[in-house]
Image 1: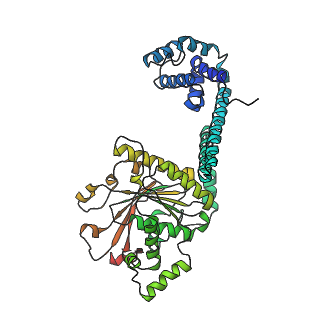
Image 2: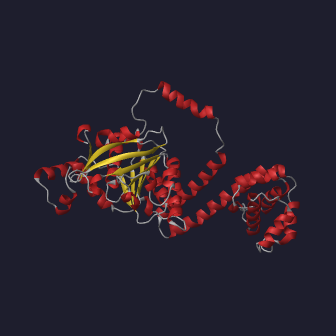
Image 3: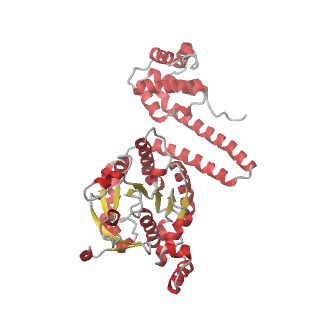
Length: 439
């Protein structure tokens, strides 16, 4: 006999337990989701019970039926007689945890059965990539759910002990994160390196150099930490060819225009050929997506991680991602919240490139500050570090120089704030450190 993917009696018992014991309701409403119930009327009852509980309303047969009647859902939920039957079907609320585990197992089975149907369709169409993507997505969803269920609070001592051992027994180090080496290490010295499980917001006005700096950071981390996995750049603006052209110009020390016009001197031609022969750009992966969601980026990053490892994920430009929200503020907040969650899910450093708003041009010295982050305070709230780029030449000062100030405006690690000056050599797409006396 084919095993069923749901049990109506267990679903009714779980609902009944919520109505006869508030402690059982607390447990069930924490661990269960609406789609853990297969039968439509049971999902309706669970949704209404959850709403009543969240408002602090006492749960019983009368309040539930009244709420259903007000919402014009009583008939769909089976009527008052059925609500009473739900309570009668629950012999005791003491078995609520067993009910929950059974419902969660059936929910997983239904997910896998639905996956089987989708795989059969993909295979019929010979679409192996889509089949594999659905397999990974479903598996991730199940494992993430299980992780949330089992993620009980930990004892502080057990968390601190390995940190203490590392500090006491490890070799002294100047940088605690991944080292990029950009601008002779000036960026690393400011930030302490790019730590795994950190979310960094890099903000500046248009054309100040966010993309070029991130490109350099990615290549530097790959060169200095090949064992950590391949950095991934997801661009919503530049094409993959544009990113590659800028990286090639930077590595070879030539102007991007010279590549486009094929106007290279003999030394420049040799430099370009050496970059390719020596495979200096190898190991950094790039993809262009016009207007992706964070979920799409996550799926691509996970696939990349399985194949190549993942040390660093750069999203440029994060403000162009799609996300729900009735306003720009809500949309940006959702984007930032979701990107911040990726740092732990992917165990990598996540850098989100964002723009500053136009009001920065009205400030006295034109330097961007945290309140200039475009659209939402969530960029600042969610970030472990916020780096702001300021180039005086963009505002008419120092016209003969392409110097950029990198301002660390937030540092959740140790509160280190400050800035360093680096020079952007536009003709070569390269950052170098600025000597103290020449600032």
